[in-house]
View 1: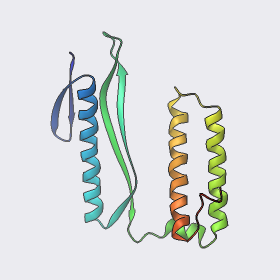
View 2: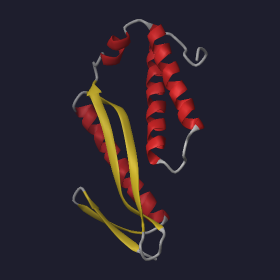
View 3: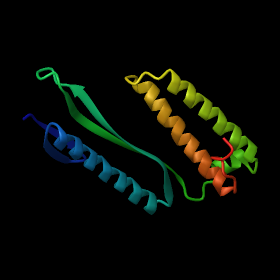
Length: 149
């Protein structure tokens, strides 16, 4: 079985291709997310979005999909940030309109979705994250959006 070497953050890892390399890379990236959480705690920030990506390629010899690396990202904001609530102030109708618009776009993309197109899938994920953030914001203002939309 093919062994692949990964290096990152001053460490070197060797995994057999297949399940071992996939879980190894995911575990490493999950540790990075924990580091981000620790940073946020120490810097009086909070994580508003985090993601882990596993990178694949086709092995030219075996013509099989193999793991070649990973990437983890986090977006931070100050704990006392008032940004999105200031944008929508107390107008819950504006939040409802924005959610409806995002749901319409999501439905449109789903109806024309090409399951092999990573750009469409990434946009769908982004829309779902925005909808969830807006629903949480509406809940903090005492509005249940799931019954309205």
